[in-house]
Image 1 (cartoon, each protein chain N blue to C red):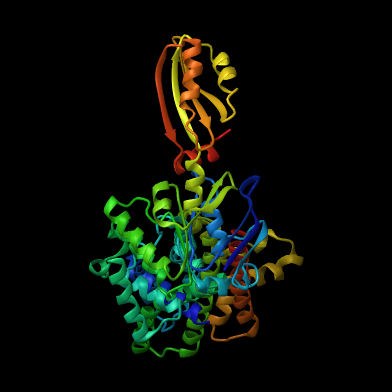
Image 2 (tube, one colour):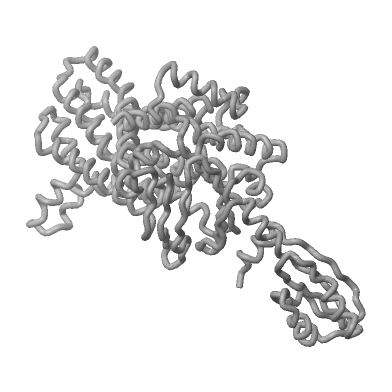
Length: 234
Length: 311
């Protein structure tokens, strides 16, 4: 446990030592700010629904960019050998990296809280969906981080890790938009697999155990998958 | 202290390590020697729990690598080849991280880091990012990493590769100093280094052990054997071979080169008696014009070459 925390600290600091963190956060804020406010004043409603409906698509390519280096870089420079031969287990490493990526996503979302305060001055903002939306965003961030981590464990090439992670995230985001291709009997199954579907449920301000369970199981499956990949490399 | 039994590691169908067994006693400095790709690094990686063996067992104290990898990792400090450290971190931050993973906290970590910085001579680079360091300094930081928790066993993979002669001497001194109390395993393909630092040498070739013994022992064994290099004109090699091999002490006649009627060859002899007069008698009897004739005692280097030759 202490070693998971040690690795978490190291990875989390690592984001801010190199310029990645600042670049990724800037891109994220510019994109969300632009897309959100370009239509905000046209609707003239004091709510953040449009912001949250944008998030899954934007996060599905921002987060793989954050997570692509987690394992790939270590494999490539060989530092993984030093890390693993210290008294830590592979699971310590995986959890530490996963938590660091999730914490980074939470930090990245933080400046957008300013939107909420800004809107609350303009009109009567309902805080329920906002709180729900941020809870959902962190859960979504955790799920996508675990996917990105898994993609990163597959290869020593960061670009391949990024593209694999982005593809997986996009599939999960868009799967419930593609339902008209499918037979009716499979509809509910595929809708339930969609990350966007569950995220939109939570961002309405209703935290349902099914949606929570969905995000937690994505994290669990991906962390477990990463563990299998890492064990296989021995 | 460490017992390795029938260790085998397959990469696909290649046998990187093929049934290696040896033991290491406490306080020994063991040199793992071998040509490139002999399986030195793989053996070390298995010992440090980085890789799982395909078969065989490794026991450190009472722990096996399969059942108690964490306990073993706590006992071992490991410096991989070319010290792959995190390039973006500062040396200080990196060592601090290692200290926390090794469960050394607070003031204790500070004093330990100061000690190591003095010992490895890295005081002046403490606040530089690792990617700015030269190869030699990286190697020293790697050494500090390996010695952080004052481990009972140190495993060093080619600790002096890429260093300049002064740094090599310094690192060797450090290793010797540590080796007085600790068990050290180091791999190298520089023979003089193994001779200078190790108590015992294990030579590996193509995944198998071909020699195992105390450094002095290997050398005296080697010293009693010698090779005579001869160059003759206008003689048939088969004829020479037939006549020279009639001497009991001659183990073999190995051709080196035959052109323009000149035959170069080695005569491998055993025993401590000098066989040059006897060989000269044969040459004189046949009246072969003699171009070269000199004796070369077998050093560790010739032992190494003979044992690891590709054939």
